[in-house]
Length: 259
Ligand code: CAA
Image 1 (cartoon, protein in one colour):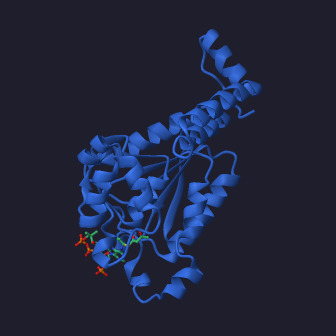
Image 2: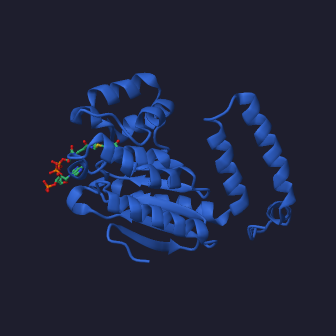
Image 3: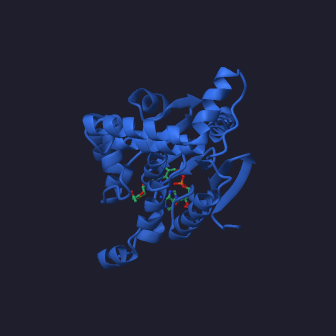
């Protein structure tokens, strides 16, 4: 499948790299890009050979937000009828395989929200995160007020959302928004190495681990721990558990088949 606003590649077995590609608009998220992202996610969900996704932009911008030029003349009714953002956002939120965001440069507004919808963010030293919608007289619209607050806490979220200040990569790492910060020329290599490791694990165990960490944001501790115990037990129903433990005992590399 070819896209106008995305470049989709398979850099190694099991790994799909989706690169946002609207350089003229710093990868601003317009409806075409969001539609194509939805299509790419659907294709990756159905393809059993895909075990991990990487979402990235350019060195200059992961994405500078929703496309302001496309939105500027829309009415409340237009936005409501179009249900702006909901389709692609829901697909990413409900995507069952892991997705890593590789962020360099600007991740602003919808760009920051898109990165936060991924399972974790690895950033380059040049990354800048922000929710500057207040400058435009609006609010974040793809989960920014909710996810940023959960990830970095109320004080920093309020500061960023109300003043529109950007957070650099070092602060984002200290605040827990990103998992690692690496030099810009090492970003893709680092992220693809992490994605390759994930792709080599049991896809069933990966899916369940992702589901369990996500549950930590949605449930009480007691319910979350009970769910973890139940899913942990259920993993013993799969051949991959037998293979993983046998490989450890036999001092060899496991061959996970997703069964
Ligand atoms: N939408 C549309 N076009 C955008 C854009 C956006 N979000 N961000 C940048 N662009 C365009 C610029 O208009 C410019 O196009 P032209 O060359 O045709 O003028 C091009 O990308 C390059 O941008 P700049 O010349 O502005 O580059 P810069 O280096 O001087 O500044 C920047 C970079 C600080 C990121 C600045 O572009 C900027 O502030 N962008 C807007 C950021 C923003 O407000 N994002 C939130 C959008 S609203 C949103 O996302 C709502 C939501 O939650 C769903």
